[in-house]
Image (tube, rainbow, N blue to C red; front, top):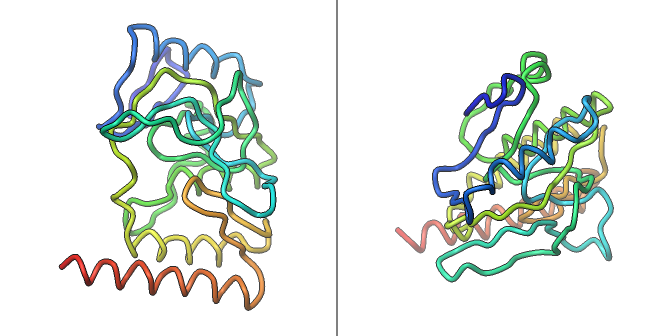
Length: 195
């Protein structure tokens, strides 16, 4: 976490690399131009509305060893439902009001901050960035899905789905429960096979 300019808290993974000397400043300048009551802003996110219920990643970052482009590029600040944890920003004042809720594990904390912001009638945004996320997402495991289950239970009254950069997670009805439980079993079996 960093507090830049006295008004923003910046959270980023240690495997984030800036692709030029102005990359961080460019991201923060775009975020500072957002409405003052924005919720959370970041560099990779998923919109509220999806096409054919499919996952959508909005971003200009590259990731992985091969520096691959992922998702759909954006040209300016774009509203999203949730953001990826690799890099996100919250205003200092809003952070004081809404610090991270206590939880086990380290998955989905930016996603939950975004859901809390929406509950507070704030908009979340993704902005273009000249950034390389050296990870390719292989850290996801069954613990991620356990966190998803908790978020579904907590926010199902607020939203019919939680759209993340990993998946769209329906929150209501038997189908939603079956979907997340099937994914949990799949991820747990993958975990056991790796041991």
